[in-house]
Length: 148
Image (cartoon, rainbow, N blue to C red; front, top):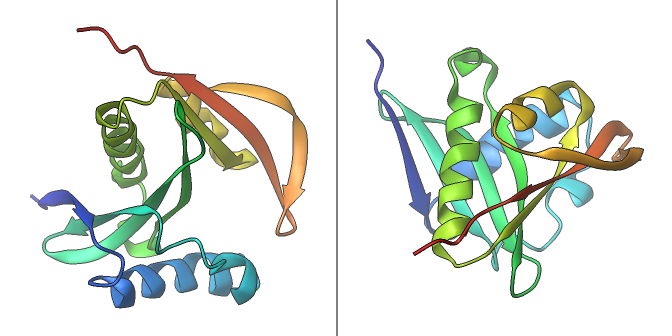
């Protein structure tokens, strides 16, 4: 049985692993331009890395938008690790992290083909389909309850 761990990491400490995953998924597979993928916003974000048997196989970043809203971005899982629930666990961990930052709303720009995964976790589609980096996306929002 494979062991999955998701860790909150410092970007500067894990830049090689994060870049390797995102470059493979976004640039090599999806043909996203490097300047769009690496947009200069990583230093100010919270980063998650998913490790399968101690190998980094997935990543996501969280950016604060305002006092109540955060955005999950750059969710990527390497091809060899897909279809094992790693993306879902990254999203759940990101939402938990955002909750503990006392935010009440989470936004994603989900690639259209993966929107169903986000819906399973409480996100709703807001607005119309749009293109981002030449890929069909939908804006999705989830509300987090802050009950004490």
